[in-house]
Length: 399
Image (cartoon, rainbow, N blue to C red):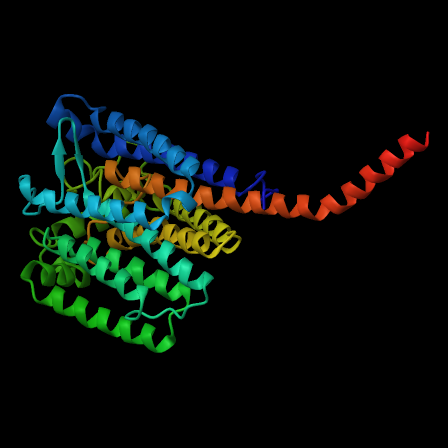
């Protein structure tokens, strides 16, 4: 597996090169989308860019630690239980802090804020990979509500409830979706897949239509121009920004959406500013980069050394690439506004750290696969080496 991969020496080098390109694009885009707001809020137009660079550096450190520890250590049940409890307590702690725009989603510390629900996504991926991987190894049937599988469902539902009451239905749906996706990858029977998809659809419709502001988001997605100055304002501004970019864009820094027209221009809707300033060709370039990254992630998953590595790498692929596609679809008006950041391109410290931690785990899967292949090669060559050694010894004695 540690061999040439396209124009790169190996898949690991391909990941780092694509990540580097996306981070450079993201840094420029965060600055371009935020310098007006940063100057207005903090008196320093580089404020959000500096934080982006700091969180990127911290992200690389976290990625390195997760990779060095390795997924085999980190997926131990005792450690996972501690991680799960810690994240759950953090999600409870958000209700102690003041609400922001009507939601309790952050823990505020001096100089930074933490969004625990981001960590919940990775925690569920790790729990699913550990338990389902062990079941596959033992050839146990994968069922949603039988044996150890039911414990995974219960733990995920607890996370969903905590996130739902923040309130943040979008992130809660992502956590549930990650769990279901990993069950499907693990071999969940078709009848249970259909049943769970049906339950998920009915639940999503019920929870969405049962709340006024969520109904409005769906109506805005279907027709943002029915109320362009109030409820549909953000979506209208995003579509105007995207449409005004044309084929080549208005070029870096010259987009108008960031001049207090588009809310959340440097976070959830940073992709709209990027689209305005780089046009269709820039959007296509970024989309292709994410698809290539997804292909490499999937390649590592399919060549994993064991079942846990396969499921973990698959879950990381769902997390990184799935959220990227969801953000682009949301900004483009194909999904309701659900508050999903575009990793590397949007500003978001918690999202960056968790995404980099997830990539560190995926790289540890790759490292283990390389080690396994080297062991096989050594094992295959060992008998021949032993014969050569015996011949050499006898020759020396004969002489």
